[in-house]
Image (cartoon, rainbow, N blue to C red; front, side):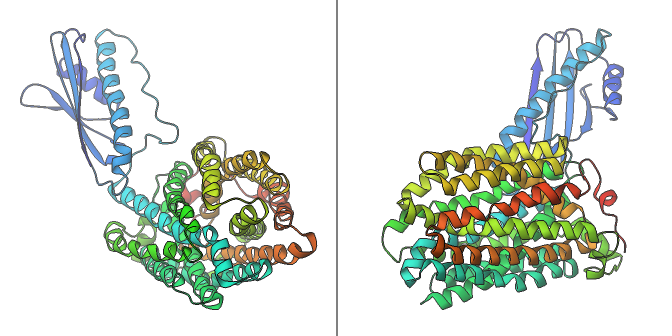
Length: 525
């Protein structure tokens, strides 16, 4: 991505000499160079576009400031380009305002404010490529992972399953954590890049094969493996974002990445109206994943290994030691995060996997009506909540943001399943806000509190408890559905678990806001 931008002031007044511009540059810590035409230029930091050179020329009555910047911004450069141009134009105008103030002997005006959710931070090209590629990887994961929830009712009827059999099947798919445990550990041994790319290929192939499954047994077996690779690729992509983001903007960056990744889930939901075509239409949703295979080679060419892990490899350091995760320095953190993962997924799994069936069977929603509900109540509110949550995690702290967001999400989820229209529309939106608000801070904390050499291994351990919580949550709902008579009421009861996390567990973790990774969790190798 290249940017060439010029801002001109016709009311600049008398021209400034090189000495004046040198004073301006010195205040910014830059060295001035005199160009052949008498203008001056100096290198400037250009945020996510990598590098820039600003050239300033002034004559009697007018002055102009020009910036030339270039950097590699794969996949999302088109989206951020207008924002970057807007911020750059404000910076050039400020530069000329500073020139006028220096000439007149006044204090320079304050600099332009950065966008809260897009901090004015300098990125290297490798950092931009890594984070952008990890975002695409998360979108692929979200698409494949969302299909089973989107098509729950369709494949249940296609295979002639009862609610209890469905809950059992969805619980069994969580056994794929055995794949995830090994994969996450391998991210500390073989590298983040290799494990992520391998997991994506396996996930896409298994998703396509699921669309061809002849019966529930085959479908369940394929989804066991697919779920395992979802639980590998997602956490490893998040690790890449945490390790490659500039210090002090990790949570806000993770918020933007989560939004990009969520596009995969949105794409899966767009298939909902096709379910009204016929009883076997759900298979087309899974087969469509084959198109992703075309993207993965391009992704591989853009994704470097993280700098932190590469440095460990260069030092021939031992990585992936389980004993380090549970030693005296980190055992308390690990115990709290693992217990929290268990309880949160005890509630999250039934909600994510069985909400569609609840809406269609107990609330008589069609596929198109479910799509409308999700589009109206979760898209915009969730987007805003994630961005605000990322900013608040950087300014107010991770722990308070997680606790507040989870509390709101749990209460809203309970009310969603225990009230009717129009309240379920309102509580869907409130729940999306609470969950989105907490997501960036929760993802940051889970990765920041462990050193680079065991970051993946710690995630594997927490993942094991998370999957155990998912399995038990689904089985809990399956067992209670009959006696209670409502799958919605059974799901609502699981929301007690997140409240335990909010009230008794998460407040015991150390705050990581504003601290370097090596300070939060220093390497021990």
